[in-house]
Image 1: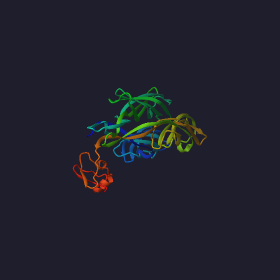
Image 2 (image 1 turned 120 degrees about the vertical axis):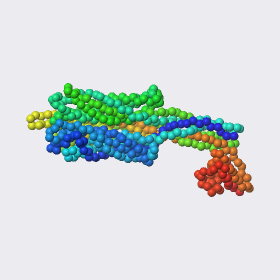
Image 3 (image 1 turned 30 degrees about the vertical axis):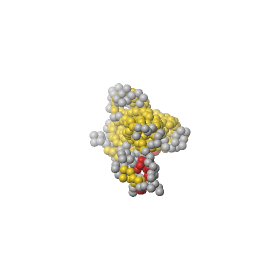
Image 4 (image 1 turned 90 degrees about the vertical axis):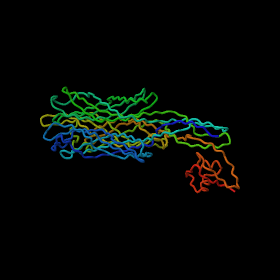
Length: 532
């Protein structure tokens, strides 16, 4: 008598935790030796600064994820002795943070995304820079499992059994190697003066993923890049800032496992951005974009969750937990932004005197927290409206127009009703779409207003116990007047022996000076307590 089990192997990935954090950085940096010192006579020798965040290491710990990286800072400054303006790129400032991720464990697969919200650069002596800014970091951990479960169960001999099965959707995450691509684009014509004069050009760019497709052994990642280029005439008197938004970027990653029906997601960032002006005054930029895709293979499998005997035997089973996750809700949140910011708080030594107009304004947004409640989702974060303004200045002989860029930081928080969401659900922010603007409100303030749309997805864990192995147990009727013992056989445990003889595990363990969870050895003699 017994049960014959046929097994199958399942491989799946459990999202073990996620978290978000705001990171404020302030670091000093020195100009590289090949660059001249800054002009100490100028009240504001730094003409333009921008940057992008790059993560260099991610490590999961117990309840947290350690994230480290740096900000690629692009800076244009005026050198001493009326030299030609200089554009310099620094891998500064560095940052390191520990993101709280409940459920994470050391050894989990960890990934993180950093969003630079704003960057500020100020002179610190003739060869020093003080760099400060804010970025948001989101981290997620995953755990890979391989388990064997019963695919079928058949009784051997006169016994009869019936098995109950359930369907479960399991997902396996396949991280792919990062892949880079170089994008070259012409942004337009420089509006500055004499084309014969040398120009310094600084460039910075950001990229966001707008879609991933998996099919026929390939994963195609579609992105959009936003580029900002500052061009400065050699004397530093004429500055022009050009922007190009929604620059398409497509990266194809070869992956033999990719096929139709699979899903994919990706992170993307800009490793390097540079710009130049040709003899005709056209501005050209070059971006090095890196994408890191993850392929998600989901399948529905049928597993045995319980086995019952239809004859006199008892059935004892070993089980293993399988974790699945299903999407339970989708929704969107629109955050309305309205704030007034003192000009002096962002303009520094530049002030706003003589500013002709605000040429353009746009926003960078980072989420620092998202929480689910009973039918409600709360979200908080940080944004910055970057404004590009035109200023008319004079050198004593003539007036000239230059452009400046400044960042206006704003914190925000809001909530939205999502009736199907529960507190235990995991939330993901799938996309962020800002529409932000800043306008001058008198001589002393800027009014910031607009909206940010967040697309949200809620996932719920579904855990079930699947049968791994099963055994039949023939009950034994005890003689109340005899001392009874048994010899431990293959696959015997204290709970199985207790079921066989109709006693509690606690009583059986106590009669043998054992704990209920203690292991027992093949051939060991176990005394059976009898109620007399």
